[in-house]
Image (cartoon, protein in one colour):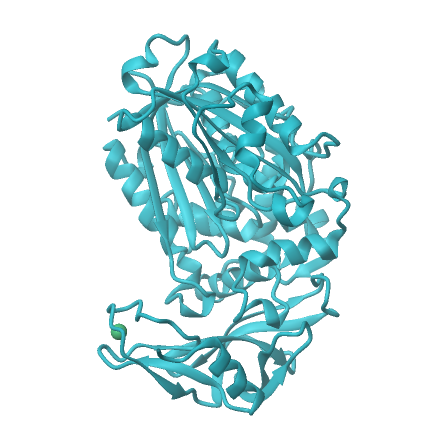
Amino acid sequence: MSLTHDDWTTALENGDLLGVRCSDCGATYGTPFAVCNDCGGRDLETTELPEEGEIYTETTVQVPPTGFEGPYQVGTVQLDGARVTARLEGDVEIGDRVVFDGAIDESGDIAPVFRAE
Amino acid sequence: MTRASVVGADMTTFGVHESTLSELFAEAALGAYDDAGVGPDEIDALYFGNAMGGQTENDTHLAPAVASQVGLAGVPCQRYEDACATSANAFKNAVEAVEAGIHDTVLVGGVERCTPETGLGTGEMTRIFASASDRHYEQPTGLTFPGVFALLTKRHMHEHGTTEEQLAHVAVKNHANGTRNPNAHFGKETTVEEVLDSPIVADPFHLMDCCPFSDGASAVIVTSDDRADSFDDPVDVSGVGHATDVVPLSAKPVPHATQAARDAAAQAYEQAGTSADEMAFAEVHDCFTGAEVMASEAIGFFEDGEGGPAAAEGRSSMDGDRPINPSGGLKAKGHPIGATGTAQIVELAEQLRGDTGERQIDGAEKAVAHNLGGDAATTVVSVMEVRG
Ligand SMILES: [Zn+2]
């Protein structure tokens, strides 16, 4: 079995951001999959994602769900070939450079945080 | 080619309802029976949609419950859940079943309650809607559904120059259309200034860029091509496309392309031997104004990047060259999640019969419905036409 959610979460708690890379086609993803969605390959190696990237898209949530205190910024961050969805700090915009800065655990589940460089 | 025919159609008003899910569904279903001139003895199966009853009202195993309410106990009943595309998927499966000869005539529809009548406030309902985003890689960030579509729309704005004013024009148009729909949740017009002055929910979306929380139900009777002529007013289903995109959002190569909609539309047009150019109008899934802009491009009404300017220029208005959401869309008609897909089919059927009064698209021969679920990862596109 390749990278599991439990592995991904444990790594994030320890300050490491993991993704997977397909050995067959080279596609990389910011979250675990059992099978590569690009080529169907099953050999997905765990890989450490780069800690610096660029904002692909973002929004500021003003009306949060129960369990969260708004407002806060959420977005997807381009890290070489992979993207991750993360909490953002520093009022960033599309194209801005950001750096991995640990994790939040606001709802009882962990999410990565990226901060303006 | 005709795959199946819609021979009865009805919906409740969308808005606030005190009745139970089963009672609400029955109101639409009995209307559809009467419209088709059938009773439960002529219905061979139920294809039913409800997205969130388990979470909102602790109410599951709903298919036999609603079937019993409308005299269908005994026939095979199945319930679908595909977020906001719930009842379009029920419709797709119903069309396939009658086309394949498994059943002759079936009832299809959906119901949902999303207003505070459920006992749930905005925060709790926002949390339940967010359950359709990725449980492990999106929900922990605090991402909401306005947030999901904000992420898609912000990138669309970045790539194509779409503006907040253009988005506001979508809301203005759909509110104007909603004033001509007696079933609509909102019956009043708005202005670009009012939209832009309303509070921000998740930028670029103001409150008035977002569809409301609604209660409601919709239902249609679907029969085979062979049997359609024994009914008074059949409308043909000539194509139903259905595609799925990868989740989570971070894995989509071009999220604002809404690829599942492009794939589903291509399938539907090919089955029907037609193209976007032949559609008299579209009903699209405008849960947020940006979603209508992306949908209008994905179904081929406008070139990529032209959806925003087209809305601002009035091209998608009732008197434009490519009308979109004459019903008022989700934005003004309302969005009771599990009822939305078949409500679009109700609008297509009524328009193609020429029965929609002051919101009628004159001479409409063919039309298309686009119903998406989740972060657009599920999309069903249906083409219907006047029976030849
Ligand atoms: Zn691969």
